[in-house]
Length: 77
Image 1 (tube, rainbow, N blue to C red):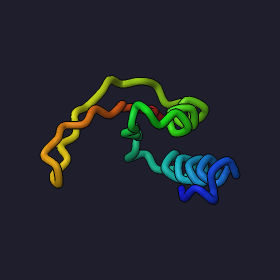
Image 2: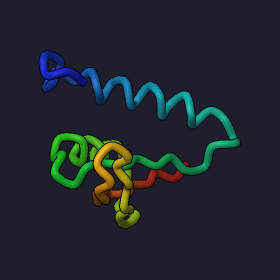
Image 3: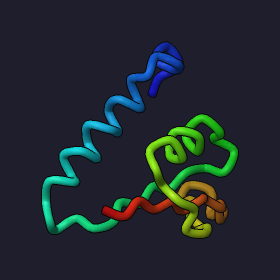
Image 4: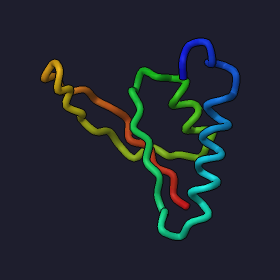
């Protein structure tokens, strides 16, 4: 979300709508979210939505060659 939309509830409403839609199909059993561990707002949102910690992953940044740690969160239907 752009800075002008932060704190408006738009991200949460969008995520809830997408998860509700995904929950209507039997093919989807797990939804994963990959979040920067310093992004406290996204981590809090995932927690409110019922995601649980599923460990961390290392993501390669092709532009810099760096390896960046991300939190892996999962929600099971």
